[in-house]
Image (cartoon, rainbow, N blue to C red; front, side, top):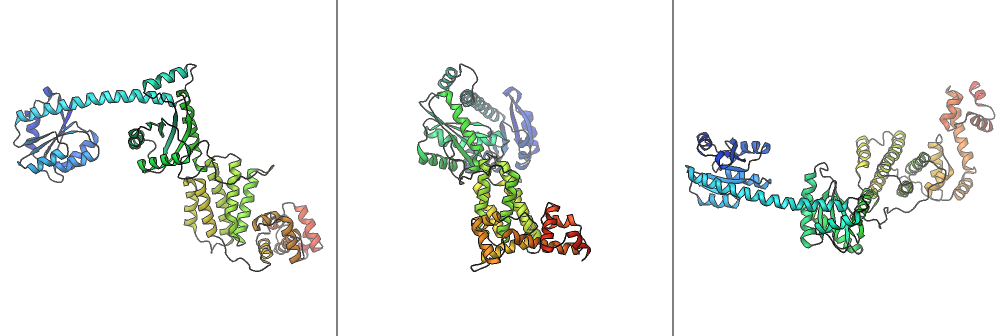
Length: 516
């Protein structure tokens, strides 16, 4: 049965139409009535009718406003306009909005019945044509999906060639481009189809190939290979213009026979999954390097945990010593390390969250008043997981960490030594190494060690030991236990602490504690 809704502010007319028109014999049924346009919209949202009989003059929202609203929101119903005024302007507007009939009040039953019959015939014809179109589309879509999805049978080559012929897709070459829309309702297949429909015009309309949807991708099967970066970029811009949403797109490369189409599609999917490590604003592909970062050889025998601790301390010392220019190179080095380890996007983001949080914590713990930026820090750490490209993550992490840096870098020839001394006195309890400071200051370890010895008269490790022992004496005088003092000043081995303390003080820590 074809569903009808009557919208009129006159209760008698609504009742009269329901009673006087032979709805059932016409293959119709009145499913709802409404007194105005706003009331009608509430009902239509729940159960859209096939035909709306609508009065022109109604309070709140008149008939023409209702029709305009419904058609602009995609409702494909037939409209019959009722009017108590022989106003040609209303008739023109009704025709403009696609009204199937325009009747004057009081309604003539024969004329109304005749109009309804004509509208019913139109609906049935449209349903028939739509069914034929959908049947052809479904068959072609099924063939296309079969070509894109790998086949396991031994007869795959012959079968796929037959499918290509049936779907009129037997071409001399193929290239699959997968498009992944970002920030759309990925769970809704209709959202993907809506975006795909705009691409159909851009691609199918000029004979470049065909477009389909395999959630969560919009898939383009091109009938000619993309040759060179210029053609790839041109297609990327065409997709960008058609979709007008943020997306990632990748090609799986050109193939020559139907049974290789699925391979091209698989490669395109793989490229999209690695898009985080690629360049923004371009069509990705299997022959395009996945990373813009320079190579970095992993340190053999070093665990990921040890590498992370090393990066944390090097970045922290660089910031704390007023040497922020080293931050971006260190971040790139960390990223390159993870890439060489073939880590996935989530692992890299989690690692940068951990690294950034640890550095920020050390800085804020050291200067709580100066770094009173809790909300800003929280927002930045949350955004780490929202970056779509590694380059964006590096740039923003660099910017944020650099904003925390102290820019009071010592001047003059001895600035490197002053930085080292400052770091030692601030961080003597940490696992300080000359190699770490050399990397931070961009000098070789041997050269920096010699500069330090020439300026201070002490080797780096000797100077560090003396600072630690000096602070250990203060803690022992406060009554702390020997093993606690050892840990507090940076010695993990108590016996080693004993030997160092006795070397520089002349007696054991216990003896010093008793007599002071």
